[in-house]
Image (cartoon, rainbow, N blue to C red; front, side, top):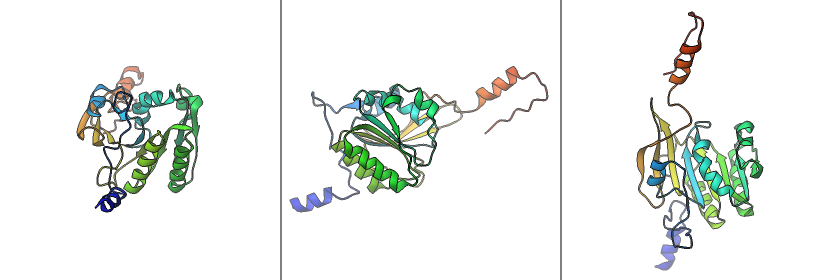
Length: 232
């Protein structure tokens, strides 16, 4: 019986949700996002070790959402590895972050190389965090990174569109960033230590619509012939 259970636990699609790291007082170490509604829904924040998934388009404000978490991880004085995977990571943004000196950007030409580089960074134990952009991520690969990251006390952030994933990924937190005409939301598909939730309202640096741009044109335009283009 024990052999059968052991074989089942090792299956790539089985997620061991209770395999946690804990602080000295017995509580799991979590890093808050600095968003009250989101932190409450995530039982205090994201676990400090393991993988998390953000379903969002690149440049949708995902880095601002992660900023408070990255600041806390940077306190370990280890490297933060960025794997943009053929995307262009804004160097001006990175140069203005407090963890710029700890950040290394590694460019790869395909996702297989990005996944390999991510694993090597985790195993090196020189990194406190790896942020990787992917077009898609398979559950088996996500679970592998989850296990490695917990083993080596590293936080792995997977940013991907997520439109081809039917269910939740086997990671600590699987969230999706979205908005309507007025508000930004986070949808939690999976969260370790709490229940999934939908439509968690958050404060977001980007406007949910282009009304601010339209109003600025209306206010400062001196020409009656100026055309105002609105994006629906």
